[in-house]
Length: 335
Image (tube, rainbow, N blue to C red; front, side, top):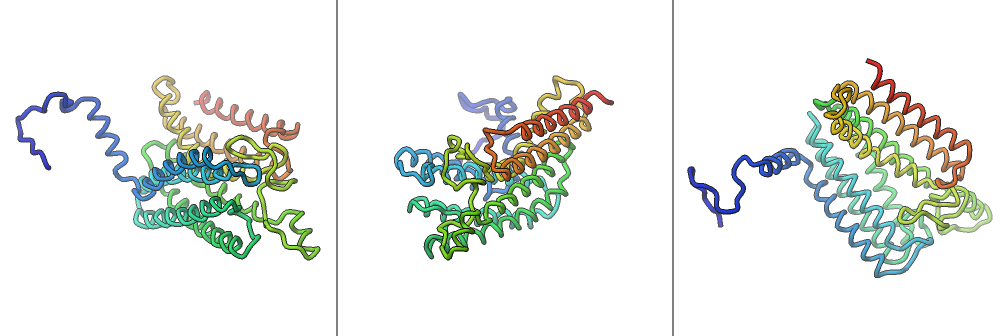
């Protein structure tokens, strides 16, 4: 039923009067999110709900696979996917042109991820590994289909990343954060390719006429399935290629959040009110993030656990922190 309000009539009891801060905030929120890409925004919400269902599934289904709860991987993919699509929904709304192309590509991303996620959940329900699994013809077919989907997803993300480089925002810090975050995220997705190379043990099985059940893996120096960090599952005894993959992908959220934090601090710190200063700080942050991505990739490839860095890794990390700190100080102090 539609209620008509005639001019001059006052709102009913309890209704906020026109122009209240609450109504202004709601109107501002609607105006800022109205142009977001809706299918990817919906995908983010659905994946957030699915992540909660995976938590419940882990409580009800105590099975494990490779030493981790069977539903831990679907949970991590749901959380990561929710962040990924929420961010792209916002980024597409910022494009000054090529909006139709970006909408089509983002729809494609949603469809591909949904199909891949269904296969991942199907394998989890069967108690089977989804990635690298070639133990049976069915497992090999599922992994092959997922590999094709990931390749298409990478190409679509590449094109979207190129389009994002044309984004121009009134705030230069946010503009550079979006561009650098999208580029580093694409690098992070690309680093997943390192996990598809056969391990030394798998190659040895082939040379002796055997047939390995898995081709590829994320642990360097050891077989997959050893001790790992809670929830994340990253190896605590060897290198883990999932770490650079994760760090790189989520530059898409980290760098825009840095720009938002700098803008929030601007009223309290006079130097941050300068748009150029904030933009330079974002570029310093992006360079530091790229250095961190290179560092964790190098550490993983040396078969070194993220929780047991050697002196060389710690020294490189200290130099990176010093460089970022010095660059930030110079940006703020030098006029």
